[in-house]
Length: 252
Image 1 (spheres, rainbow, N blue to C red):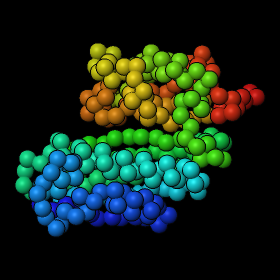
Image 2 (image 1 turned 30 degrees about the vertical axis):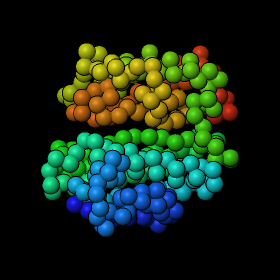
Image 3 (image 1 turned 120 degrees about the vertical axis):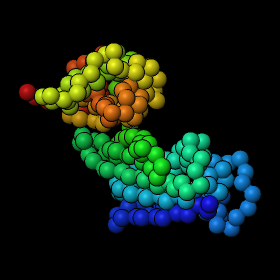
């Protein structure tokens, strides 16, 4: 089955990013012409699927940040193709829709952020596979603002995430469940998802009072509980030295 592309670009979105991703997938784009399947993800998938991409990306208006987002979107598209090639394809009428969407915000005066969601939707699957990611940038330069820009001791911040996150996720569950809802305890958590690895804590949003960690599907809880969050107040992260440039001290 040939691979096809349906590009839907809203006004103000990254048309350039869509074209970049299309250009980066020569095997996929040439699928209609046929040929022998090879070993690449594009070639393994093109004979089995009909694939549509929806790309919806904001423009920040800062060159370095916009360039980084275009490159990141290309990586997300490749992630979707690898998922399709490695996980699906047993049925002849399978189709895939990969959606990469970003929402821009300015959570703090000196920071621009984009919350990205990649949905990998298979028409024969019970539910889509979803991956969350967040990109942060210096609002003036557009340079990426990772943990090393947010904390004087980024590795200590990561360690604090590891030890504080399980209880914070439980609190999130209690708040989300509400009266009569379905709560959970520490025994329900997938503790391996909290291991001290950068990848486990790579999706986080910034707030005036701290950091909110976002976990992937199945990372720390079963699918039924959704995608958990864990709020880390600045007071709990004080030992890592939160940047006063990012979080200016408030006069209370």
